[in-house]
Length: 262
Length: 326
Image (cartoon, rainbow over all chains, first blue to last red; front, side, top):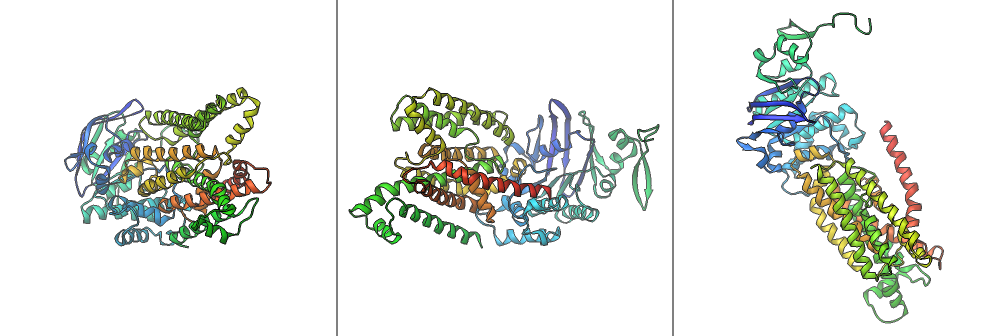
């Protein structure tokens, strides 16, 4: 669905990703892993057409992103940014309804279908009681749920999510990941998310993209990319694999030698 | 109250404000008499007062208020900043500089207007070029550019005041404070206001989306760059028109959009027309008070709007802080 070809991305004069060629197919759930500042968000922006690549190209179903009208792109690709820079003065429901913007036939007033979808997502994200509260009055976790509700209201074919679990409590983290897994399984959506949680990455992702932050990258399935050696090298931190309940977990080793607190 | 009802109430309130503006003055006229004179503009002293004296003044006040509130809504949406106002880019300062320079050299009214327009366009192009140079619409860089440009223009305005002959200074000061006493034929300004509202209405849904931030808006299908330029141009046109009619009247453009939001209207599809009506009505009332409270002394309406606007703004800021502290 989304394809990166010889993609090169830099930030502030530093090359973060070089020659990235990867095919992101419908129904796949990708986890993007890497240290802070390794280019995860920059890659997500490039895949969403929000920033032009420094080299190479990104295409959606064979069409280069640069030539696609933004509105058509928005009907197929939805983005959950790490943070919004806006100041939204309306209600939570108004906020979630804006997810229908790329689909709206008339710019004035939403259709009954738009409202049905938005109200459904408000319910699924346990926001019914907050629907008519001002969006700015929501707590961090509630706001993240409202942002997710707006994204699902957009009904895209590809979900690109930058740290979707931030500010969410454990039940809502699981609910978010279950929903994304469902979108991939039942609707054949492509899901690509930046994650820092290795447990959830192992449990929910079928493909992995590891970014070194120095140009190098590695894409592969769980057996290949999700090993103690690769992850240890990625994070610069020794990891001990532990098998528990049929799942493989990675425990960070305690730093050796006397730390500052000893 | 639904948005539709609120808009209707505001329209009625604006009409009432216009009626009050026509009725009040050294010769009070009953509202019923005004309506009959408006419908049948015959001869006579009352018809002359209404048609030749008060109506032009009321039209000027209403147009300026509507234009300023409109520009305020657009600037706040463009910069995603609640404290943005029509003058934030110094465009009005450019217009003021042109007009004052015209006054200084004793140019005629038409030449002053042309000079003001030239000054405004020059500043608008400068700010636009600075804002677009890096390819994005970074609100903070734009704001800072505007503040810096406005400061420079203020220095030039002070220079003109120093250089001007004593006799001309009072007129210039009144004009700088915002005064509708010198407003000439304001019907074109009313037409501009109506046209600008009509042109901006199709962009109001995009303004709602733009409130989510530039990147998120783009991801929802908004061509943020093009919409930004359009909002900037329309807001600048409104601010300049208002300045050319009534000088730099403060606080209307900043306060009115917030008052309408406090009334529960945040959706730009309703916020924009509601603010235009509320701004027009409020400035008409303020100007009526300004010219009749201490009659025969006429206060510059800008002083009055600032006197009302400053406490209102402080109150609003207090509320904002409560919000942030939650």
